[in-house]
Length: 298
Image (cartoon, rainbow, N blue to C red; front, side):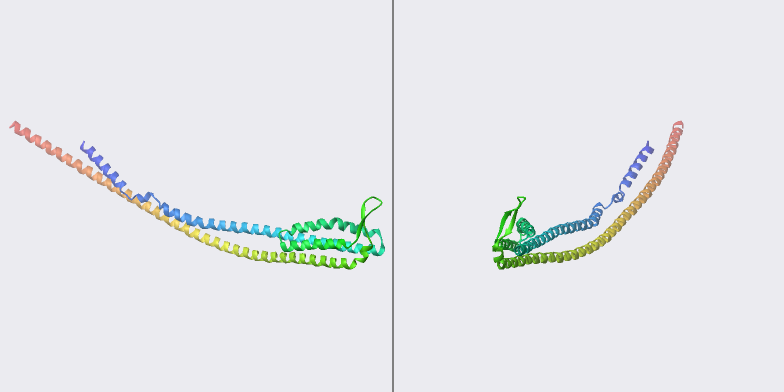
């Protein structure tokens, strides 16, 4: 009974000893590791967001520049088309006045049909630019004055299709038409020059934007290199923390084994001493009983 009680006490003390070992052996510094992970991942994410923002800005700017360049080229094309049609009309008109041949009438008819829509298209394209819109309106007015000075009158052909034939006024108003034709040329040149300048400015801005993009890419590459360096250092620091935690755990396990072995040795020694004391106690008790028996017999 005494042996069992001593064994239970020994195991209880051994359990208390193992529980009293450092608890940090089974735990890792989670907050510190979390901070390192956030630091290691935060910079790459920020760099990626920055690159995405730069690419989106560049895409929007390129789309806007492309639309503006397309509009400018369309304005130039429409203005040159109007000028070419008016000049063709004037050449055909002079040819008819000189030769009175009907082969000069189709260019006149074509110009009357195509110039007004071209002028309306030009006005629509320049509606957002007050200066260019004013030039387009002045061009339409100059063409109207030129057409008013032609003295053209519709005439039916054999097929019934209307043609225009210059009258005597066409010969008399040559000087007035020449002045309006010069005005048309000047206005078209102003329209084209303004759009050409806009295209050159866009190309210069595009070159600057390209340079800015190159600089941005260089900065991004530098940031990526810095990110890789920070990530490498963070990984090494985490490896060091894990190595220290592992060493601490192994040391704690070694201490635990040593404590267990010491406790077991102490338990064995205590058990042996307890048994020896119990044997001595039994021997002394037997001797005492034997002495009592002798006394009773005497």
